[in-house]
Image 1: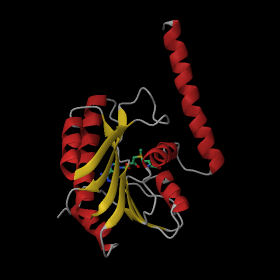
Image 2: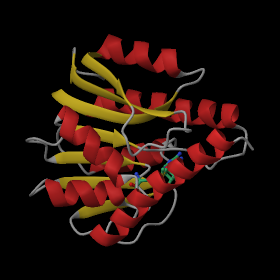
Image 3: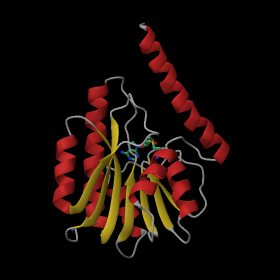
Image 4: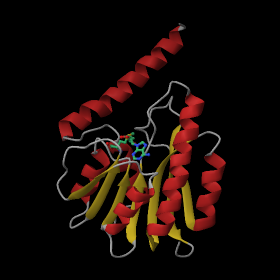
Length: 207
Ligand SMILES: C[S@@+](CC[C@H](N)C(=O)[O-])C[C@H]1O[C@@H](n2cnc3c(N)ncnc32)[C@H](O)[C@@H]1O
């Protein structure tokens, strides 16, 4: 391995370790929390936002962050995997792609919601192209669901990958939201194709 490649790997590892260490010190279940923290600080997602749906929530750091940040919030956290309890959140265990799970989420709200966040990602197969396609499909499904669930002034944040579904997601976002931004937080590993899409304000109520 060349010298500059070794030092790049070393810097990346150090970078990751800083967030891992910080999350342990601050009592968060995953370093992923710092991606959401950066997104929130730049795009003001949780200002006056009380009802939040967190898709792909396990192990739970995003939900922990929202529960801490938003007083009197109602958070519904969804994942295929089981999660340890988080105070002030309602947890639903199941596959978000199932209609029955989407209906269970809806049953928790009597009106439209303020924010939908999605960090859903499939378990890696080792093939980065397949992973990014499948995770991309999850982001499209999450956006379509968010369009139906959000208030007109609602916000949607989702993990997306630079890959074959990227253009589809961005054009769906621009068609349905007044503001669309793509952002890669510092806490997101440089070598990852991961980015986040941040959408605000529906053009019209979704059905
Ligand atoms: C990167 S992790 C999320 C980390 C989380 N945001 C946190 O802060 O702890 C991605 C999660 O997406 C979940 N996931 C993947 N596909 C899903 C699906 N179809 N329905 C629900 N959850 C899914 C995985 O089980 C995994 O826990």
